[in-house]
Amino acid sequence: MDTKNEILKILVCDDDSQDRKLICHYLDSITDREIVTIEAEKTNQIQTALTKGRIDLVFLDLRMPGKSGMEWLDEITQKQLAPVVVLTGFGSEEIAVESLKQGAIGYLAKANLSLEKVKNSIDDALYKWEKHLLLRGDIDELDRIISHDPLTGLLNRRALDKKIEEEINRVRRYEEGFVAMMLDIDHFKKINDRYGHLIGDEVLENIGRLLKRRLRDTDFAGRYGGEEFMIILPKADLSIGLTVASRIRKAIMSLKIKSEIKSFKLSYGQTFSVTVSLGITAYMGGDDRSSIIERADKALFMAKSAGRNRIRVDELIATEVLK
Image (cartoon, rainbow, N blue to C red; front, side, top):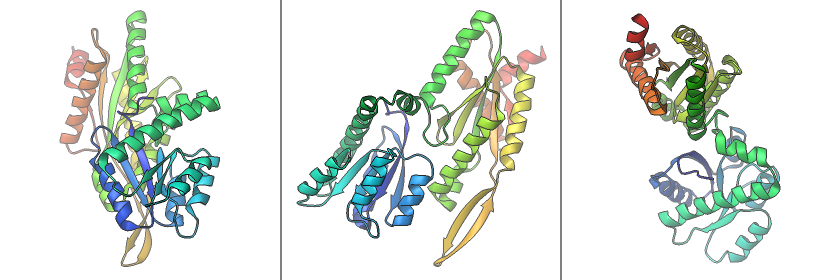
């Protein structure tokens, strides 16, 4: 499974802050793939992370407070939640072997850590996890992992690109149109900075669920990267696209996201809303996947430049409609 272009959500569990920060530093230094890192040092933090959407890989230290690493390893592997790479200290070879017997996909020695070792452990773990799923005969699960974004449940970029190609071929054969739109969450970085990545993930999950509910069975949507989504409406014209986009924009504005803010050792709940900008285009004769995406992206840029929380149609298709 080629995961180089996919967003990986990695959970780092270690109660030693220096070791945890060092691993996270190496993960942040990886540039050939997008990685979202979640740190956990306590039982409730690990449990929250495991229940908040999908985790693609777990780095787990076995010396955890409250609930031991072996207990976490047993739970994660029994439920098939994610591949686990055990973090071991100096002279812990016997523990590493025992953890592999208990279901760990690999181990990483914390002594003499390096960026290369961390990268290799990720590649090796994901490769072994794919083989594990194949041997288990879980073809449906493997197909879902390959084609869907783990956080939102929507198509991932690779599967979305393939769907667009299929739609172009269908349109050329039957001379029907379709609408493509790019959706971007406004000021998403500020949401992550203020509330944390877990709440940022919750925003993405909520939008993913909303798109599934609001679109027709024949429509499809995917997470194109980061906070950007793409929606395809087969057998639709620009008028239908604008109506759907307007409904989606208003529905997302009505979402209420709950967060817990911690300040001076006090916690209090806060509810906030998000807005999105959308760029719309429609299939034109001679289009390929790149030209459609480029025009939708330009329309999205126009919407954001105009102040965000609005919809814009790409200028080329708008000119054609007015003729």
